[in-house]
Image (cartoon, rainbow, N blue to C red):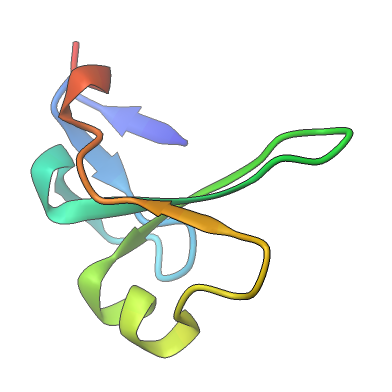
Length: 63
């Protein structure tokens, strides 16, 4: 996850920058935790694969 200016995040798929409240976090717990930040458009393309969870509110990560 690439946080920019404390309250913006770069989408891991399209690499555009969005306010942190406008992105979601796709997670999977494995031997190594897998986390990807996705904007609404990319989330619409990718969806939530089986075995993954989606966190829509990640505003607590803002600095």
